[in-house]
Image (cartoon, helix red, strand yellow):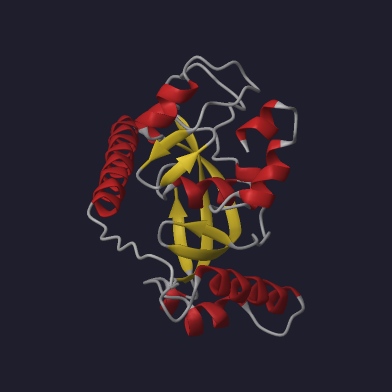
Length: 228
């Protein structure tokens, strides 16, 4: 795959063809602070120019090839934020419900909502495996950093009223709808809390990476000779 990329093939097309991770949005991980990416990703892309691809990178989750899409200088802490009022349906993959089956089921939920045969609230109450199910999936008003990046970034791309396609996060497969957005000014106390939330999120991502590495390192693998 690396050779094909360096020969000029389209990155997003190869993601769709070969990636074993989330293939939505051409494999884009979104624009986020460096401390919200695994250290191996940051090291591999530090010297890349925009548009270049990295060598093969190994992490606790597997092997990766990274493409640098954009790089920005850090901005000062904002004194106003855009809050989102969203709702979602969450299906958690199990041995009985594979991720692929969960994605297909969530895609079917979207079709049923859009053709009027079911409502978002009713499907959330019946099927969502999340504490918000009783409220029809309503997550209330939240600011930036409230959710993990793989959920928040697709949510932020939605217009008001729009429903996403299936979104895969570390918690499962989601269907997301944005109900409203609003811009609010922050008090000094809220600015401090926003900074603390960012620090907590970065520590969470680091802890998750460490956990994934430990799980992989402790996995038991049995090798057998093929039958003769």
